[in-house]
Length: 233
Image (cartoon, rainbow, N blue to C red; front, side, top):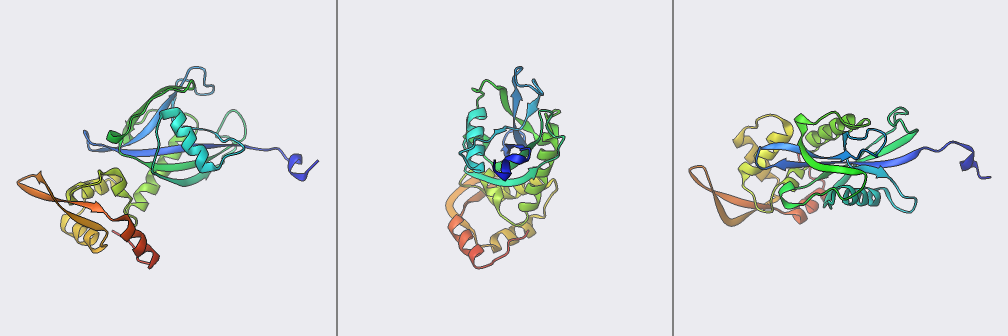
């Protein structure tokens, strides 16, 4: 008998906190699934998408598979958030969860509940989520704080916008995530100083005059990061 089999083993799950922007109501939303009545425990509760990992797959592969299975969703932006290991977090036993943070544009994807364990799937306003299963309220709060912190030093807000956007669009994303207003002149001075936005020969009517559209230059951003440039709003 190997030494590893002498000790009790914990189960490992992945849980995904996927944020988006509701373009109709100007607010941050999160993807939740409703657990089917046969999904003990917490049947009928809303929860973050998640599930147990398979022995042969990596954590990120498990996260992507589970998200596709439970919500029909594939993400381009997904990063590991935190590991949650309170011994009492799951009534089924000792379960450790590795949580992931994802960003998506809800209007560009289609979500659906085709898995037997998923009764429904929908976007919920972050400030209006129902009581969640397990410790998922804590997971959601942790992810929200990470997003607020990270958006201040990394331009991940562009992952919530269309490919072409105005500076007002970008500022509004930051304001929604941070939960506070930003000075327009100061924001534009800093964001343009990073030299990662490419002006386009396209305009959109924005108030009384046309507003120029921009795109995010990911290659330039990576190049500047390699040189040690710090981004901070």
